[in-house]
Image 1 (cartoon, rainbow, N blue to C red):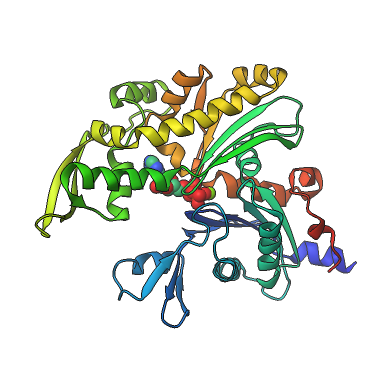
Image 2 (cartoon, helix red, strand yellow; image 1 turned 180 degrees about the vertical axis):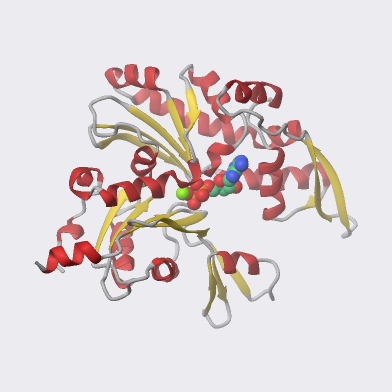
Length: 363
Ligand code: ADP
Ligand code: MG
């Protein structure tokens, strides 16, 4: 009786605790929060000053002792307390009915340790959850992409986030094999920073590098990718720019400087990292059981996460693997939408959740 009452009224929540962005979905309301996974901390006192959007705005505009921390940057929880505070903040911000503790599904990177899983569960509980379930990000992304994960066929998903690229083969509601690589969007930004420094003696910030990547970055020559795109269903897509101004400080003179960078040079700067992602995909393909591989050759490789938006990446992967590849719809929210779908159909989909002994423990 009480249980029924609780599940009827409780505002159940799905969270994608991403390395770069955190998204929160509330049952019946959809995605209500999409903010950077950033916490601003006063290093002198250890005090948390801001979380999410607010914290990101402070970066680089505050005195030196205020630092922006991304507690999940490398795909592992580097600072449990800060992660917990961030999770609590987002969960509380999302809730309206504070008097019923919600059930919470949290998407975590693939391959986190048991200790980290327990830490996330504890963080969820101390953030006010009545029950915490975990789902692995590639599984959530595949569900968000509406792939038939519970059927016997094979599904191939590549989630490229900020800190990690996760490659997984999913069948019968479980992950058959998965790999996690610490090369993703952040690394591409670092590549651009290094390129500016080596090529032009120009010191640029991370935000500038990211703007360059999003503005003119590509994994494959643009003409080819634009052609490819105009053949796909999106009509009237903007014509991409081929060059862009990059502002920074000249390391020799110490003065501000603007240099125009070309699409081609940015692609070259990121090439090595991108090929490492491709190699990881190829090695997952090599390890895939042959029957599943037959399905994958027919259904293709699905790309999710913000990194999937890099121009021409689908084309490059298709060329390198000889398997049709496409970016799923709305790739940045796939994980939280997938976790949300599990939340809405917990009875039918419970098998896709991560099993840990902690989950069974009585409350
Ligand atoms: P996570 O799940 O790890 O938090 P996201 O899926 O939110 O990561 O993706 C964030 C990454 O996607 C960042 O590195 C960001 O620079 C990158 N990104 C976002 N949009 C684009 C784009 N249009 N082109 C290339 N990279 C992009
Ligand atoms: Mg994400």
